Image 1 (cartoon, helix red, strand yellow):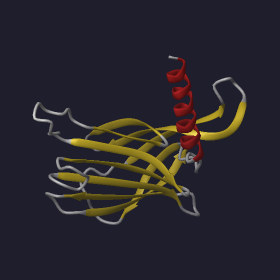
Image 2 (cartoon, rainbow, N blue to C red):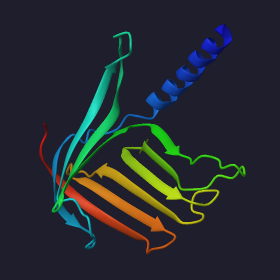
Image 3 (cartoon, rainbow, N blue to C red):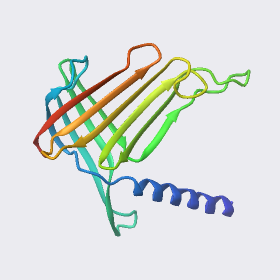
Length: 178
């Protein structure tokens, strides 16, 4: 039991150290209004309300290098609002159960929110084959960045085995910081 406890401490230390290292970038907090987009596309939000949680202390309350822990996004569409909160620096997914024949069947899903330089990247996808982009599959990549005028650029790329691929660029201006 003592060995397992020590192993968990090592695993948690490695995970926390890895995730904290990759979580610094610009603050996207605020209300954003759509200015323009590269091409018409369905389901484009007309506004965003974004909140990033900034962590400044460790679990013992001691000061540490600040990092953004998670991001909450409310997307306002003509048809209503959709909200989501994602942990930054977390990569995860869902794998279906193994059947009685020993084979995995069903849809596998994956997601990640990570920093690439000063850009925050949201990735998600699903597939029915043995590896990503096999069987029936979809992939979505959304890259958030700020330009020199502090406007928010979202570049959304979608790929699919059953539909056309697309890339849409959206530009938002910040109207207030909560």
